[in-house]
Length: 385
Image (tube, rainbow, N blue to C red; front, side):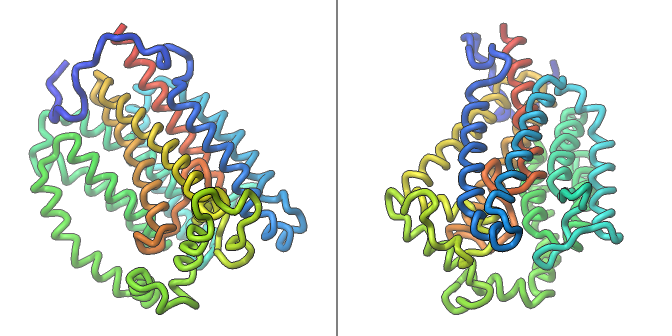
């Protein structure tokens, strides 16, 4: 086994038995995920019932669809758990090609527009967001490419340039949609994975400096982005437009106190807080379950992330370690950004909260990612035996 480029990805695994990994499904991953999915079903109904009744004539409209998404996600988790993770190596380039093709399809007339952005494809009455698939494809590609070139990652032309080109190829269609939440996620994810894999920090820093002008231009090229940034700095000055979501999200958390108002008794979801069952479902949890509900939610995510990092560190195969690390990092970034937005700590971005928010693409692909993590962890455990 060749030496690894960075020691903090993996340490020498301990030989002590790990019962959870010995079971067909890693219970330390499965329980928190299923718990969050269950909470998500309850909160999607609580947050959307009034909206669904007014818009579709049935308060169960979003709940029924989310239940179908959860079932599909469970099937995806089981399938990914039993799919040998090493085979993802062969699918790295096809996955990127498919993701890029779907992102282009959104732009050439097949896209579905909602909330002023064209980010979805509509198939058989369901919408699919290619950006979610692009994130998984990028992780697989980076893990494959860095594990293949790990001896030469310190060379700028080998360790940085090819990966940046693939990232840029996926980012351009996202910028045109526009979907800046996914742009931020993929950019941060790529930087973190490259650094963890062994790419010198100076290469990443130089790229960051070089991209600053482009980022600044994108920021000032649209008036609504400037207003969104200004409303982040002082939402109360923009209470009727760009700061509206942030203010009502903060009001939801403030109303919840320690124990919350009680399930179904929140007020901000009643046509005050936009998208309460998707991007701002964490605010509804804060209002109806209070600090205790928020703490429980953060704790469940922490268990998943800690387990994912542990799997990455215990995996002797570099591809598996980077794949596990990338999947875990992507989940952590999405959780942190969504929670940061709802708490007013970050500018508003259209990102769902994994396993909780309404949405089929996010739920199914995140549960599939958990299945991949389980497969990596099980193989690593067997090798240590």
